Length: 503
Image (cartoon, rainbow, N blue to C red; front, top):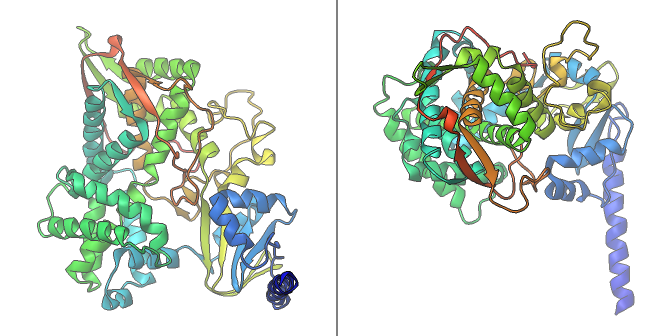
């Protein structure tokens, strides 16, 4: 019996290696060479399930090639973290992000077949151009920023009424409320706690929905809850809705999409608006408050450069323009947090057979991925201390500064050109406002005896650009006496940009 089992197992192993060999055999010799999995056929899949996008760190270290292939049967991912090749990929018209936007909106919007046929790359391009326009500094963004800033202040005020808080849970709620006010107006659908809760349940199930996996349909039920709220909202769209949402509504209508599908597609904006901003703000606050010396430096910077105090000492005003332009250490720390914590990959679909750099053949229908982590931790780009957290790394160069100039293509938390996140100015302003208010108004300390953990456990296979912690951080809140009083936020005109390293 044992002999028969051994023969069967040996046969399975031989068959698996034979199948793997056949797929390699049929690869075009000009394609990037495949990285062999530890277990044939399913090894790469197991690696992704175990390590998420950190799996690319292991595969990239296993080869000196500047581009390689990860194959799962006939499905191929071409992987490169060589900035020389990413430059070329960004310029290629046959390596496109648009099909991913098109398919993602259709999938998560659960649209009808008629809408699926209407929502093509022409509509995607129309949306891209108008989105970029209304989210660029100007009067459209001014109104959106003002609503967001007022709600951000309100959320910080409410937080400071408490003695303790779970940081990630609070960040999730604060961002939804502030961003929701900016995008959809003060009466946005996520004011309803049940809808807000449904949003996060749906978000947790989005990866499964991409492959049709939600056996208990918990995610689909939450999605339906959000859809229902948005259908009701768009039946009487308020006057204080953002230009972004209004323009999207107009574009969908002009292309003949029905009202039901429009409201559902509008709800998918939350997929970009909330999940990425929340962990970015969480980690920015985490990195600052876990470093007392840095906290003191940034607190002094914000108080002296961006806060106005009334003569009687009872009123304070945060100047957002000054926060964006005159607090370089706060901004540098924010960007260093993104560099160190960022774990996502930039995707491109190969729409036609493409000969990258005249030597690497990328076959139509497959995908090119550019993992950010190997680039963000490359000593050739960032120096010998690339793996260290340096809050001063992104400070503007001074006279005699010998630091290497940071190329936008080496800093990828907002994507890679030409597909940069169009909302990066809005999201950065939001994070800087909330972080600045917390820094000057409160001391936050962990209630756990462990204190601030330098490397807390993270969730894997995350879609957001920065990973979420497996366990929330429970904090004690101490209100600072010298910053106690009535607070206001002055936004000013959004022609003043946040000077991001990515552009």
